[in-house]
Image (tube, rainbow, N blue to C red; front, side, top):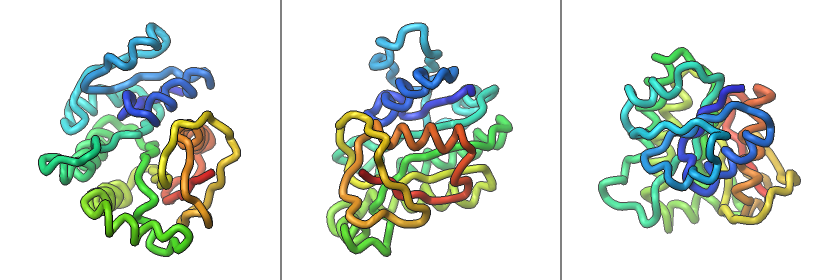
Length: 208
């Protein structure tokens, strides 16, 4: 498959790029500052651009089979980035429709699971990360009403442990005691769901 990776220079994004190459996919990474992608050399195509500009995204998306996004704000989130995810989603959905590419998998946050009690994800999110919860919810609303073939992936706290492949998956819910997951396992799931055309139109909780 021809895959376009957004947020490719972040922790999850780098894992998506690496694993997609290992799966034999043709990978393009779209990033504002792609210097962290230099170790991949000629194994990937790199496009420098602004993720908030629909026209630039459209040109990058054209000709690809699917988009995988691990894009997110840097912490702490500045006031200028308070609605970053919302603006990104609007630009991306418009660009995908214009480019004629329907399949997209997007990393979000488990803080949006209101029915999770162990852990109390939504409560923790509202208490300590209220701005992120609000912005991520707005992003998901735009993606969910886009009419495209989307999958939203909501992981809990991310770590840098190696890929295990032994993570738990539950559509519409965070699995019980889902406190953490490795970025490598999130990447594994996102690639698999695109390859298998699984969980289309679904919000999915993943955890170790």
